Image (cartoon, rainbow, N blue to C red; front, side):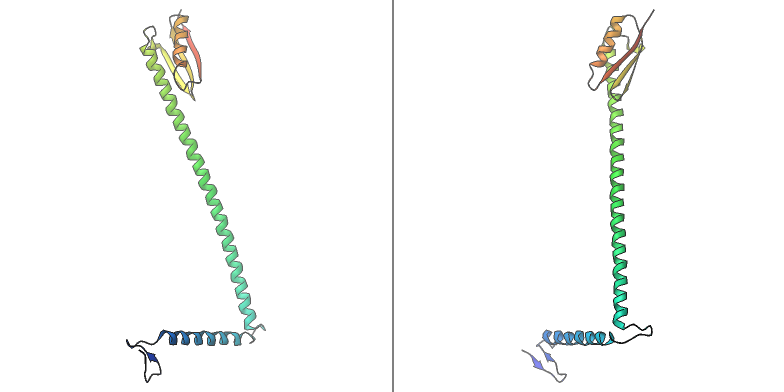
Length: 171
């Protein structure tokens, strides 16, 4: 239930002003404000422009500034994306290089282990070097059979793409 008080407002049971009346007051304030602004648009300033023209210029200047800022933000975003991609590519390349070094070390260790296991080989006199899966064997053995055997052992290891057998025969 609503009651009309001496202040002219309709209050509810909890003694609050009705919502409809507050919206009505707000609408009147907005209309009055708009009329005040519009009435000033025809007035001339000391520079010979109307207030409306000055407002329009200010709005245009603000819009131009906003467009420039949006362009710079877009350019910065593109540059950031390019930098992130370049960094990602570099990280991937380095990871591949590390993987290759680890693979090469594993190949070298495997060949050395197989040479040590072979009873006819003297692994202490054979150097093994691996780069990108390409193995180079150096050192000295007693005969051609041992030289060829070392080459076969190296080429049998997984990951070997090529064997350069530079082992010399003693004597």
